[in-house]
Length: 289
Image 1: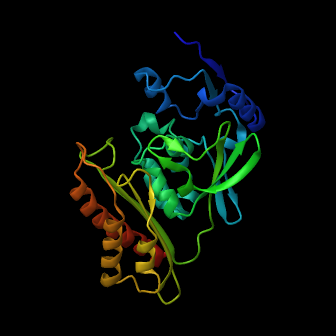
Image 2: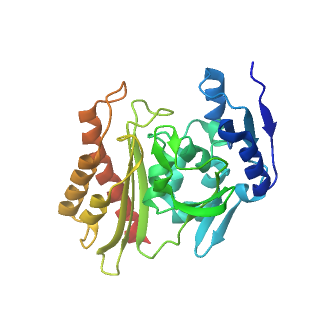
Image 3: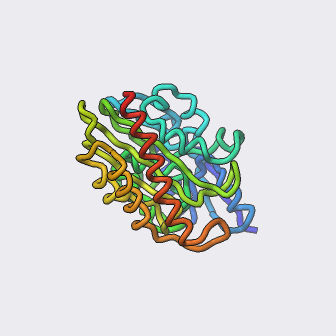
């Protein structure tokens, strides 16, 4: 049996050092809701596990430049109970709320859900739609990246050896803006998404759309930012014609697989339907803000 070294650093620098020393076989423990399952199944065989939950800045939620800085190890239940974040970015909270059971919510984190690199991760399309960025620490110091640039393929990320995500930044919410996340699953709860869709949009004082982002999950090897979906809304009153173009753009962007949860044809169709519904919810919220 392979011996596993376990550490629980209390600073970012110490975590980077221990990850670097562990090399490519080192693993981060944020919530552990994926890693522990992978260990038991034999899919993951790390020589080093670095628990980052004792690093203060990874466990904080704080206001910053009109937006919010969310530590990568903040649990889903904690973010769901943060009234200000929930009011500003309800779609992001909706995505995280859909991950697992109440017990899982007490451990699962935004950082872990992203870096597990599942194409069907629920929090990721919502964060992409929100134009969230992340701060990454590594042997070369800290750098910033867009959330949509992290996952490169199923189970793979753009993070280098010794790097890990420290925090996420959700930008300031302009007036007359809103977001939403929806997913479709075969069962009523605790299942993996067949399709997920996140939309964020902003209106001017007259109700015309001036900014928009559409992101999809579970319809390609990685979460997708669908720029044509945004183009379908910007400059319009987000009427039926614009929403129909958004739906078509969502379906056109899909590159899904056939599996036991859905066929290629079904996922492609549902992506368009969910994108439109999420946009309608985001529009209602934008008009109310």
